[in-house]
Length: 316
Image (tube, rainbow, N blue to C red):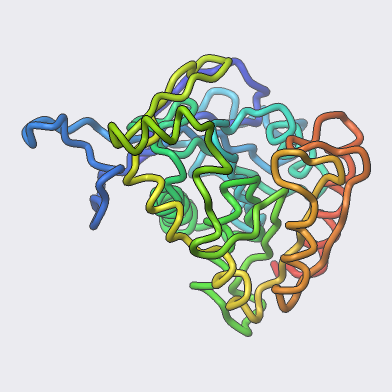
């Protein structure tokens, strides 16, 4: 159930913490709520921001409602779009927040963004390349949308690391029924299979030496997070993960890949690999765009092409 969470945002955006402890987690080490002694459990919540697809001029009737009432009054005839952030990011990353707002306005759809576990305002520890946790978080949000809010999901959008969760969902929900499966958008995702990952390429020599000797190393980064640990267990899980099998195995899903031609974090060649792997696939390259699609022209271009995809494939 949602918990009220105040934040200074436009009146048509609803911010809340989603309680994820209702049905528990089946098999998670990184997602554990234990304090290490096995006695104390911390409540797991995912921070969410949902933009109501109702035009702002019609929002006056909802101004004095509490969050449960606002959510219950969402127009059920409007589909919803899910937006997922990338590694070491959060739901209010500049281009994601602006993209979500513009998509809601352009399509008159509801749009929800959320922070993965250990990121932004969501609870829990941050774990390097925790694709399994990302997918469980996506499932939690999906369950809340379809079961509690009774809304239809029209599209799922993933940026960078989140693309793995998007492709896995496309694979596990692959169907010929266009009225059931949403469309999917891959923003600057990396195309990799098991054993493609090489720590010697991704990490510095000193980091790899510490990883071998101590089983972990501490990575320092500019920004609010500053430091985080990368463990040998996380590196091994990263090495074993396979996005290619999901991209190639989703035979009926409608997938759009958007990538910047100046992406230095995940080179644009990855987009062309997805174009060869995916069955029902569209590809768009944004000129002069980096990994985070910096610049207003990038957001406008993304919104335009995502809107075309949704209008073409989303059946209301």
